[in-house]
Image 1 (cartoon, rainbow, N blue to C red):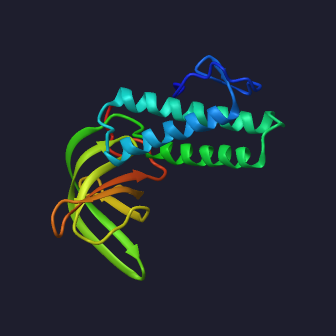
Image 2: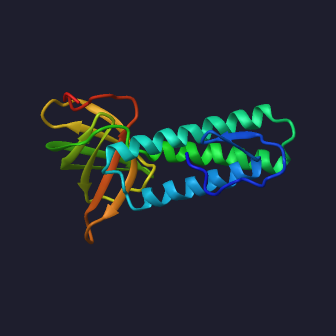
Image 3: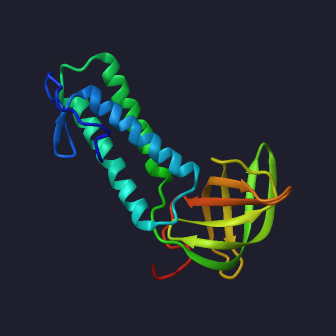
Length: 194
């Protein structure tokens, strides 16, 4: 993680090491928030095509979480507000890590049946997966679904089933949605070599 501005001239005690430099807790918190905002903007743009950039972003978020956690546990001179901010940074960083693409993607055309059970209603639809990863899939569907909902998917060729959570969605026309699913407890549902 890079520091956002120089800290020379700061006269207070150093409490955190950031990018091989000692800095104040105030500067560390500000820099973390700036980095988290930058990462959140990248996710809004769905800028995850570059796998190296995603891996680097994931490592920097992990570093923020580790440094924030250790700072809040070790430093007894932090104010209550600084402790709250560090907790917020850990929470936000964890949320962003969950949004970070975890592995490579492959284009595919695999027939599946998607099941949605919500509000006492059950829907099922046959569709094609257009992109797969070890941890999920991207596909289209026409029934109403929201981010965070649980769905079940069945491969039409093998009849294997998996549960997943909708992580993102985009409307591509009046009736069709593009969805990104993350599987709950399954690695390599697609039986591909990664």
